Image (cartoon, rainbow, N blue to C red):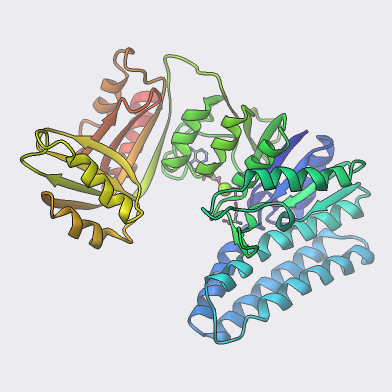
Length: 437
Ligand code: ADP
Ligand code: ASP
Ligand code: MG
């Protein structure tokens, strides 16, 4: 059995839902994971924002607009009155629920309940449509098996056990359908796996059932060698090692959620990135095999702050780095890049929430300066240190761009460079021109 995950654009209209149904039918007995229809989660965030601000009129108007979109989709999707009525009933229940948040108290808990409605609605529509098409499909409610533990990490034992039981209860189904992104937390409350987290759901399910493969179906034919939103003429990469894919996802390749790689890697389950609009395209295969002597792809991660801590006694004073890292740990902020010299250390963070407190504490150990609005450019491929020339090629491609930090040798798969925000697009294009063309 495989896990097939369809992202927002893949189920974004009635037409797309019909295409997905045909695609799913042709691929046999699998577990299908759906995102919300494209735009829905963003709109649910917007509605929550109005509710936080106690602007009930704004919330109502936005809810009405969203509901109209669903009514139209239902009219276009179903041909029989029976299933049209079923679908309308299911969607009306979801909107009644969203409208029920009209009390003065609105917190993160309520917001999570609202955000969960997108995946509940997309699966309700596809489920009814598959039934209308005489397909023997069973809906597996994610709230019954997808759970996080007290550390907000997936509770893999629970997921495996509960999902196993649900599957065993329906051995004769031809298709299983479930929601991506949504889950319960250790206390049974409604929660989610963070924005874009349906990829994570697919991977966690794949690991739990020891799937043959995890297919991530999206709106592009695989992981491209550069960010197609900023560079023209990018091309799909046919194969990536798990580690390469993890680096690219973490450093900004939006096609894949960064958390998705680990469960697949730990269980050695190949992940395939495929295009719903072009189902025959080869896409990208992510697995455990390394290809040598190639730079494969580039990605960029925005909103980075570089922090430099200079201390004249850094090298002699053992324990200096520990003290520095402890400060970041205390303020629950993770570090992306690190470079050191005899007189200091530079690190980068992508989360400014605790920056003032971090800077305050760091000043006890040295002179602190920061550079905001930076971007990490991550180049991935066979970058083992014995290879000659690859790192030179990368640095040379960027010779006209000021580079704040370079990190190399941390893994066999990547080299990262920190540049200014205003140089990002130029840097990405130069790397494509000089390395891939
Ligand atoms: P989905 O809704 O299916 O989860 P996403 O929008 O999350 O889809 O991811 C697909 C998008 O990722 C593409 O449309 C593309 O713009 C963007 N993207 C960014 N970097 C890359 C890359 N290196 N390769 C392919 N797509 C990328
Ligand atoms: N619907 C959620 C989001 O838009 C999860 C996902 O699409 O993966 O973030
Ligand atoms: Mg996505």
